[in-house]
Length: 273
Image (cartoon, rainbow, N blue to C red):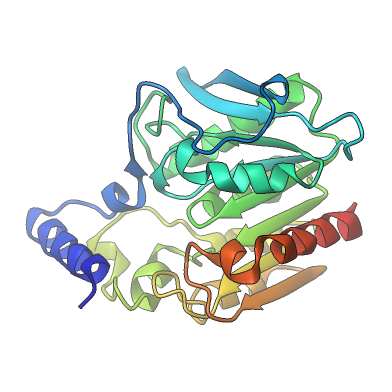
């Protein structure tokens, strides 16, 4: 038994016995004193740490502005449940190579951002991030990108808040119930663990933008057959599906090869724009 599976099994025993909710697992926050941006290669002149308000909480993010020769497109990147912005900085650096603006932020309770995480908080924080981008005139050519938990934010935004040029979804779960029932690790009823819905499969029906979904065949946390497949089938046209052989939950760009991964993202944005 792998260390990851053993850890999660012990976690499940604790939450079932104690009556705690799965939200404490889905929101895997890590409070810090400052961001380190590991391995950063983006010039300081193009990199700005920003703050904005969400329900009275101060949230932190980074706005990366493209070179003057860039496309003018902005990718709003909604990260996964792990830790904070630092954990996803390699992805920010890769997307920056496309010549686009990139905005990444920490949800309430993550990194330097104030507050306590919740499903409703995710929605409000995503809306606040869009409002911030509107305040700096960067929503005319907006692409939403959600990874894992971040799909709860990006799909909600595309369905009800903003009309982006496209929506990119990496390793989404269909709902809290599908996550637990469809995972080889969390095979228990969602109602045991959370009162939240996290219903991407239902919300995605309301988007009106081109939709690209990427999912790994070997994702043992968010299985494609019970999650990504359902989200994709429910999404309206136009849409495109990329299944990555051998990829797990967190290594799709690396499994594809970063250059190939970026080509897929660029082609979808260009086709949608």
